[in-house]
Every structure is written in C-alpha cells, then in structure tokens.
Image (cartoon, rainbow, N blue to C red; front, top):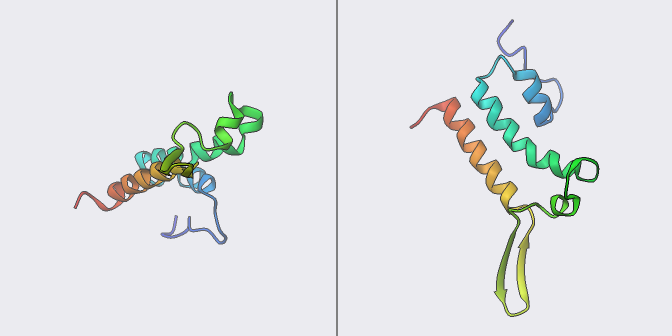
Length: 100
C-alpha cells in the first residue's frame, strides 16, 4: 500500500474513518474515536433503540443546567458530550504525538 492511499477523496464521517482505519491506526486510537461516536449515535437512534428516548434527545444524564439568577438558567443539553469529545480528542492526540 502506498503511503496516503487511505486518505479520502471525499469527506468521511467519523464512523467511516473508524471502519476504514482499523488495522492501520493503533487500536487504542480507534477505541477513543469509537467512544466519541457512541453518545451521538445514541441520540440519533433514540426513538428506535434507546430505553429512554426523551432523556437521550435532550442530552442524557450529563446535560448541564446552571442557574444564573432567580428564574434564569443556562441549559446546555450537550455539555457532557462536548466534554467527552474534548477528552477523547486529547487522548487521541496524546497517542499519536506522544506525551510531551
């Protein structure tokens, strides 16, 4: 295989990247990428696969609600997902580029 042969000719989804790069990229990196995908997939399939579709649609157990003042709140339904993606991205970059 030539170097760069795996590079896409079009835009790949994360799921496609995971499938195409298995066996080429370290398994640990693939596992972290898979963890990023899980919560998004749970919400995408909430109506047919999730045991609590409403909870999944509004962001799950890790959604954030921060009270700003009496009667005013900041609601971040996907705060947990964002945190998870940032953590997994950090772990992937650490695997790929070392602990510096």
